[in-house]
Amino acid sequence: MLFLICFFNRTVSAQQRHEKIIIESNYLLYLPEDYQQDSLKKFPLVLFLHGSGERGNDLDKVKAQGLPRLVEAGKKFPFILVSPQSVADWETRDLMLLLQGLEKKYRIDDERLYLTGLSMGGYGSWDMATKYPGLFAAVIPVCGGGDPSTVWNMRHTPTWVFHGAKDDAVPLKASQEMVDALRIENPSVKFTVFPEAGHDSWTAAYDTDSLYTWMLSQKVFKYKAITLDQQVLENYQGHYVNSIGNDTIRVTAAPGALIGTTRGRMVEIKPYDKNKFFISEDEPVDIVFSGKGKKQQFVINDRRREVYQLIKKE
Amino acid sequence: MLFLICFFNRTVSAQQRHEKIIIESNYLLYLPEDYQQDSLKKFPLVLFLHGSGERGNDLDKVKAQGLPRLVEAGKKFPFILVSPQSVADWETRDLMLLLQGLEKKYRIDDERLYLTGLSMGGYGSWDMATKYPGLFAAVIPVCGGGDPSTVWNMRHTPTWVFHGAKDDAVPLKASQEMVDALRIENPSVKFTVFPEAGHDSWTAAYDTDSLYTWMLSQKVFKYKAITLDQQVLENYQGHYVNSIGNDTIRVTAAPGALIGTTRGRMVEIKPYDKNKFFISEDEPVDIVFSGKGKKQQFVINDRRREVYQLIKKE
Image (cartoon, rainbow over all chains, first blue to last red):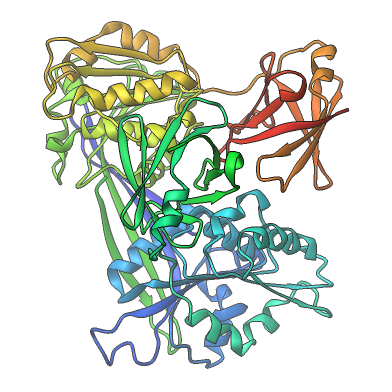
């Protein structure tokens, strides 16, 4: 994103100066036709990341491809479209700051933030979605790629990937690797390969009408507790130890939830599936039980992905 | 940090507006006496985070405590001191942006960035140091606390913690828990408890002359490969599988390093200790081997901390 940094020295004292840094971010903005009609309504927002050809200091260049091009051609969308311009690679931190700023200015439904981008913007979409897993309701990376080892962060993020089979700028393999890795964590990932398309798969992708229907029907993932049979909860009771042996967690059943106790602290562990639990509605920490008898274990599926093995039944 | 966000609409077209967001960050700046004398020299920088009492919109308040107070009283430091002001909690992203801006304006030795803060700023120091483990050469949290499960990110960060034993605002336990957790990963952590101090342990902490000598002798951690006996490398050869069984890594010995192969990709794994390896000089990814015979394994100590167990000797 374009961030011009200016500096101002406000006062000069003998010891310490008062200074400030000014940061500027430029973007194209499209508002849906009914935005002004209902001053209470909140709107979905799509963040669009252009490719390397549209970089620079001239926002008109951003109108050349993808969603901003469709809007210029007269397309009406039912969402706010924000298309920033970058001078170099996409920086997730800068994009986050832009979103925070926009949320102060516009009526945005924060359960319906969507992210898409093409080529360099496809890479930016994967990067942003893995860095901020709880932010976007759906992500659509077009002819991009990324680091497959990060995709488990997107296990709860509806994702639709597009690529051209004859792409000679970003090989199909770049998307395929991401999709293969993500499918293990998130079987619902969608992957559309245009067999005859080269690098420009975005024109066909953004002309796909069902893309918008699918996208707008997604809401940001939140854990929702379910009712589990008390017997199932009791099955998980016991003392568990992690693989390096420096932490023991005691798991006991409370009404409707498990209680985990470690180092004198207790935490409630709520079920959202038969064997899947969470700690907080808003944090992407899964606790997944598996195995039976002596092989019973759980994996804390947060950043650490640590395995805890049952050592003693409760 | 204080971030005033202003908006400007530059042009209004029928379809999409050109807009920009302006963000402003305020801070106190102190430059060492010899900063102007040598225009090529780079200087260490200390980022100081104030406590909750100094929040607001008036930078003069920041001068009331800690390092800015010492500077106002005439103390000469051999480093650049930056003391931003926050209106609410410290936000790591905002601090990162401030540092990026400062690096464009001042001659900063990026191997010698240091971080300290008191009370709310002590919490901010722990938070920042765990979020950006490769950034700071040393961290000094004073009467703060944080999330002990994140401290393994600081396993390579020299850390000196201060607290008052009679602190009734932030209990000693808040530092103690962090130190206990960090000591497992980083035995060199220093912890100074002032037995008679209440919440104000920072006056005594920042009056500790040896603190500055210790701090300024630290440089940011970079992996440095060592020469390991080829026989030791060959001991680690074999096929390893992760705990959920969806990844196998083949490890073979090359001259001076191991080669890991998984899913058709190869990566060089260089030793920095008898049983500790790294992939890249700049990224905090440890690969730690342990165990013998059938129990031989390694742990990838990055965000995932995954255990790989030997299944077949090479």
